[in-house]
Image (cartoon, rainbow, N blue to C red; front, side, top):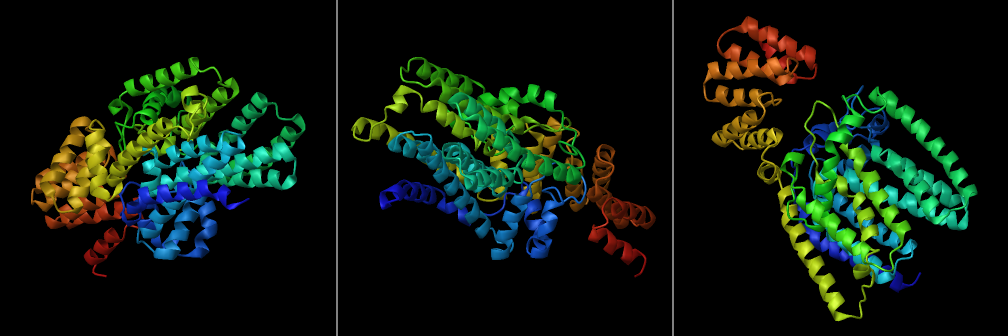
Length: 512
């Protein structure tokens, strides 16, 4: 390889780093990053805990759970060793993973024999696209960029193996496939993608049989280990595969709409707050472009659509008891499939760097998308900006208002916190944690009867919520009802033996 071969990768890295440079100075959003990182510093900074990452779900539950993603945990352990709880290295890793994924997109397109300038344009489009900002700027969003890195590396090894039939590439394919599975469950669809590719592009059967045997050697141990950790084939939560897919299938439209028209970006939206029209228009435009294209290749169109849907639909499988959100980081890997489809449209396929009009049009699109991304990434700067955007852009999601209220509470803005809690309860009177949060405000205001009523409402909804039990005990202790307080703090420790405040107050009552 000569120096010219590296220039596209250098350009992708420069553009991506310049666009996302502010992100490395961002803080925490308090959506999962507080649980996965801030509350787990003792675990993450101790390398002797490394094997435990493979025996717990991603939220560190010793038994049960819903998400088996040990490599995500290991990536956080790496950052924790470098900088403890300081967010700098975590954000830097997120940025580097995004740049690596974008470079692998270019490598994939070149491997699929797209023209060099077209591959670079598509890769830059991927690098700056606003819908991917969440994966780069929100720390847990790295789960999808890390998944993309392993999936793309695995697929590239597969393409080389099919061509050269050399064992190192087969082993590389299986290694990266296993890494992808240990990053996110969605990777399990990769063999289906490869089988479809082999059928569409006539890969030789002998190589596919070896691949199938290798997949079995990877998937079966992974599945058994995952099941032993989670206690269920899918997860401990009440996942309903068929119902989830049927209920959430329409979410494909807003995801596709955001790819072409990134005008309704949101950090945590629900389907009710997502317009479908942009997706319909985007599909209509892509369909028309393909219809009138003379040089389109049906195989790549089918393969691109399959890539888009197969990597997206597993994220629609959600708990039947929870409101499903449709965060943008989940489209990360699927976007590559949409790019493959669009590269078969003559208007895009004929892109020529020697034509000033073509360069101007491409430059305008990249600049507009970069400007939108630059603005959108600011929503991930800190916890308050994150939850403000969540509540503003998805106002019908009670969860967003409750969490915005919690951020106001942490900042001492009680009136704003109370307002958001009441908005959450107006949307969902049974919204978890909200009655407890409202009770805390009333207790701080000295409105003890109102606080007691809210705590009791919370415990009626969620009788095993340790903080509600503890807070009600604290309220009774202030009223001199020490027997009731003691009973509630004992219940708190039964629910959560690690609740140190409950243990401390019990020791004070008992005179220890």
